[in-house]
Amino acid sequence: MDLSGSVSIVTGGGSGIGRACAIKLAADGANVVVADIDEEAAAAVVKSIAESGGPEALALRADVGALDQIDLMVRATVDRFGKLDCIVNNAGITRRAYIMDLTEEDFDSIHRVNVKGVFFCLQRAAAEMIPKRSGVVINIASIAGRGFVGTSNA
Image (tube, rainbow, N blue to C red; front, top):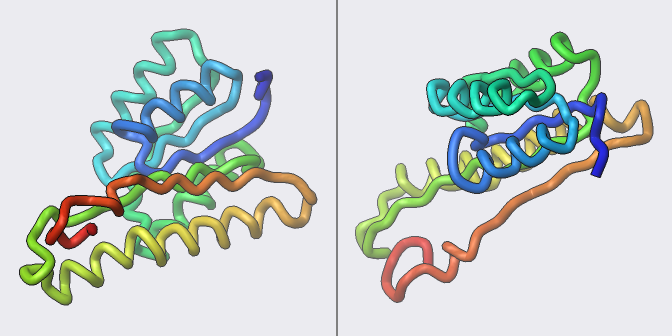
């Protein structure tokens, strides 16, 4: 697929599926913003993209559970590249704990990132895409929801 000249954000792009998405998007020609709560991991992915001769990539520290950081992530992308064509909502967290041990704080933290974060990343990205009547939103989920009997992610 030729994505030359396009601009994508990948949340949770510092490792796992997000890392693979960022590298593949870059290999297909997209400029990529690798956003992760772990800025060093995001920078390592950007370095890998650069070493492979990929297009421009930018590492950003972003906690998608914080609305101000989502706003900064989208603004930094548009300021750097002039547009936003795609967002891959990949960031997510869980707590591996017996369900009876899950605290309200754990529950709120999981939903802050996995629900609120996804929604507001989508909303803020869509605000850049709607005026040009073009854009792609990819929301990644996991089978981790199947979990193990008795755990908090079951």
